[in-house]
Image 1 (cartoon, one colour):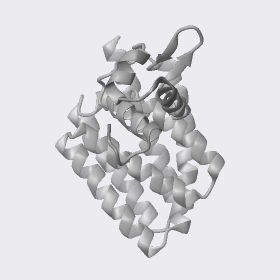
Image 2 (cartoon, helix red, strand yellow):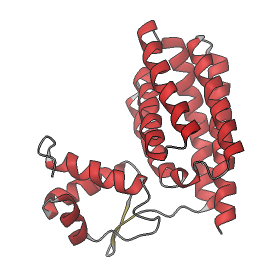
Image 3 (spheres, helix red, strand yellow):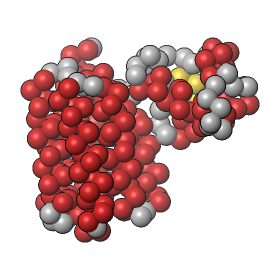
Image 4 (spheres, helix red, strand yellow):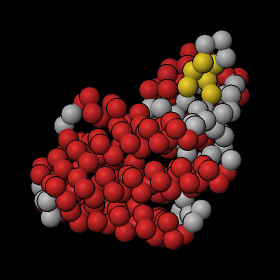
Length: 217
């Protein structure tokens, strides 16, 4: 166990990494004894961590069955991406209006890491950089309720989209283009353009993910 982290935080960090790296497959039941051995945590600390992961959308806790990694249906994925499009367009608009020079320096830094990870096909670096990008958007929105919903939706889609990264390079190349348009619109303080770019970015990602799910059926 990492002695620098509180036990619950350590549990969450370890299990989140396992889920996002696809070492736990969607639909897989998570056995408490195995998780305790993996994290070095007590059952009490483990269950506290599992509740946080459930709030993040990364697991579901089923009565009389226990925790599992959700396996989303195509319809669920479509619904999630639709709602993400609406909310992220609003976040992008607010970010474009509220961002200061210091904020934009931070944005350019994280955006560079996102595009580098997409270009290089580094899945876990992309997950980390994208997470930081969304935390940047959420912080500027200064809306705690939106933050709760968006984080849950991001957790739900994080179960699917890491497996699609670089599944088709042209689609990934298009994703870089859409993401760059979004960053440029925010940097230009153009709220309407940023909202539209965010919507296109999410819609394109949703179409790619559902097409990938169809190919895996």
